[in-house]
Amino acid sequence: MAAPMFAMIVAGRLVQTDFENIDTTKFMTNIVDADNINHIVVFLTGAQPFPDGLGGSVYFSWPDPSAAPSWQLLGFISNAKPSAIFKISKLKSDPTTTTPFGIQPISHVAQLGISIEPLQQLQLQTPVATSAPSNTDTFSEFTTRMLENFFNYVSSFSVAPGQMVSAGSGGYVPLNTVQQWFSNFQRRLQQNPNFWRT
Image (cartoon, rainbow, N blue to C red; front, side, top):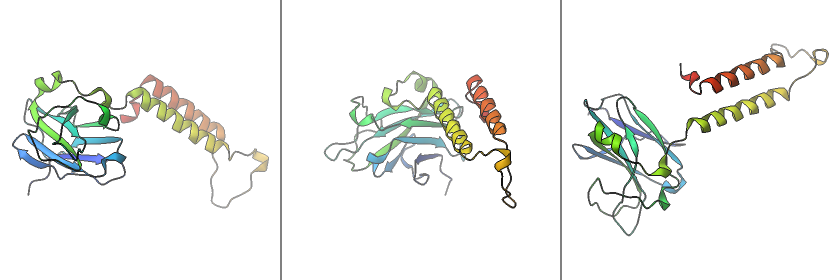
């Protein structure tokens, strides 16, 4: 059995690689308990790249117990962009739908579909606005708040040199060292939010 080409992660759950072949260019998987999902990550597993000039449109469908699935375009993945994070929590109220997977039976679970298409076509498509992944500003804000929390936590344990009591094998780090690291990290994050990737 060949290794799966696609995978998906829902926060707090195991990786899903059980994409079913609908036809040679269409793949689909089910997502149970979709009401509790905010974001999903879709990615190539690395087992097999897209053929040259092709990529995959990523679609999502909320369950509707009284109708066949209607699909919303989230975005796309490709060999040059092998993963993407999509926000799906607000898609229920978005009326923008399409039917790239044809007419299908009624489903009682959410579904994620990938349609292999030419890259030129993928780049012209317009995803639903509410699925846009978190932008760099949001990431920078999260990182800054995380660092502030870390610094405040460490600071709460600071004592004057005369108050230090030997704790056996425990080490001590001067608070100004942590403060200097925090300042340096913050400066680098402002200069380039993706510096930590290198």
